[in-house]
Image 1 (tube, helix red, strand yellow):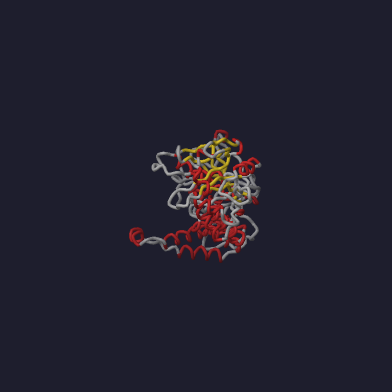
Image 2 (tube, helix red, strand yellow; image 1 turned 60 degrees about the vertical axis):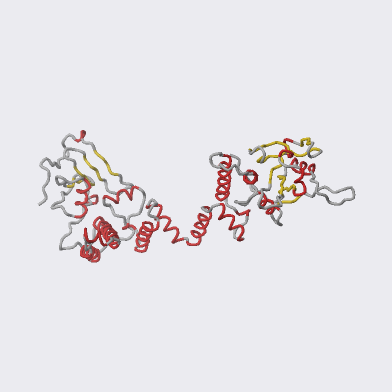
Length: 434
C-alpha cells in the first residue's frame, strides 16, 4: 500500500494565494496543463486533478508513477469543476487490458522500448572486465511484455497527438518536435534510425544537429556528397591545394574563398616567422617569402615552398600568367643583356604588377626577387649609369625589408645578364580589403 504524506491535502480552498506554482509549458491548445504546487508538502496537478504524491519522492518520480499506473488510486476531478472531456487520466494497467490503449500509456511504452534498446546496445559494447564486475541485465522479458501490451490493444489514430506527454516529452513538445505517436510507422522508423546514426557518427555534435545531418544525408545523398566534398576541400592545407592544381583537379580560378584565406594566413604566418629573430636564428634570406606574400595579397596565386630561383622558373613557364619583358636592343636592332628599366616603370605606373628578378646560375645559391614600386618613381644610379625603378623587397645586404628603395641597392650590375623584368597579365582574384 502506497504511503502518502501525513499533511497531504487535496482541498484547494486553503490559502491558495500564498502557493507558488511552477507551470510546465504546454505548447498548444489541448496539451495538458501540468502544475507543480510548491506548497508544503509540494503537490502535482494535471488538468486540475491532484496527483497523489508519495512521501519521499520527487515531482518527476511522482509524475512517472502517474504515467505507469503504479498508484493505488487516482482521484477523479469534481464534475462541477471540469467536464469529462478534459479528464485525461491514464487507464490503470491490469490483467483486463482496455480495448483502446491510452495515448499516455502508449507513449510511455514506446519510450521505454527505446530505452531498453539503448541499454542493450551499451551492454554489447562492454569489455569482459566490466561484464565480470557488473554482469549483464536481461531486458528481453520486459521488452516482450511491452510489445505484447502494444499488440493486444488498439492504438490511437496515427495523426492524433498524445494529450498527456511523459515528463521527457514536455521538453520535446516545447521545442516543437513531433511526438512519436503523431508519426507514421515509416516516419517513426527513420526518426529512430537518424537518432541512432547521429549518436554513432556524430558523438561530439549536438544530438539535434547530428540527427538533422543524418536525415539530410539520407534524403539528399547527391547534394550532401557535394557539400561534404566542398567541406573536405575547405579543410585542405596550402600544399594540398597546390597538389590539386598540379594534378589538374583544381584550377587557380576555382580556389574557394575558404581555401584562399588558408593560403593567405599560412603565407602571412611564414613571413612573420622569418621576421622574428628568435625563429629565424640562422638569418636566412627570405626575399621569396616577402614577394610571394605581396603577390598573393594582390590576388595572384603563387606556389608554396619555392625559393627565388624556383619562383622565376615557374613564371617563365607557358600559361603561368607572367610575361617576360624584352631587353633593350642595340642600334642595329640586335637583342642585348641590358634591362629596359623605363618600360618596366611605365608598365608599373599603368597599374601592372611588375617584378625584377635575378636567376642565380648556381642553384646552390640564392636568386633574388623584388616588386617594382611605381609610386616612388625612378631614381638616379651611378652604379647603373642612369635611372632605375624603385623597388620593394628583402635587402640581402641590410637583412631587412626595404620598400621604396632604389633597385641599385638590391642588385649589382654584374648580375644584369641573368636579370629580367616580368609583368603579371593573367587573371587576378578579387581581394576583400579589411
